[in-house]
Length: 127
Image 1 (cartoon, rainbow, N blue to C red):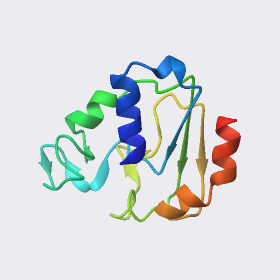
Image 2 (cartoon, helix red, strand yellow):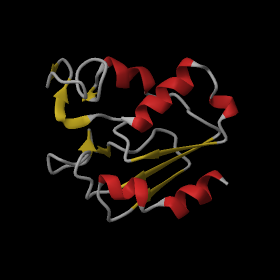
Image 3 (tube, rainbow, N blue to C red):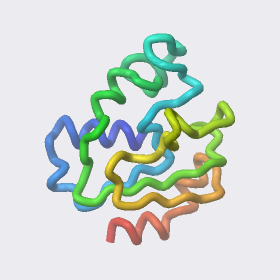
Image 4 (cartoon, one colour):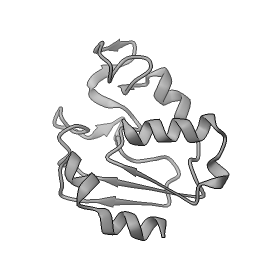
């Protein structure tokens, strides 16, 4: 939940204008299908109203907000967390896509590989 929680804090603190580049890596900005659709969702610490259920109040509260001057997503269609149901798409859009993003990068990596094996790309986006 790192990318979505970071985005929430940027919004809560009203500091998006101070963030040069926001890079969401393997985020579930549109929710996790494995959590279900709020309010008919799985009840656990990841899902629910304050979690990553599709259309949860938490995620709906982030929708459309800009998290930095430049916004990027790094994602995969092989992500075992975001795509655990066999689909990465929420309402036809990859869950890791961020509205209004400047660019998006796709890799053939799993969830944790996106975090660890894209360091060069991450560096290029924030330098």
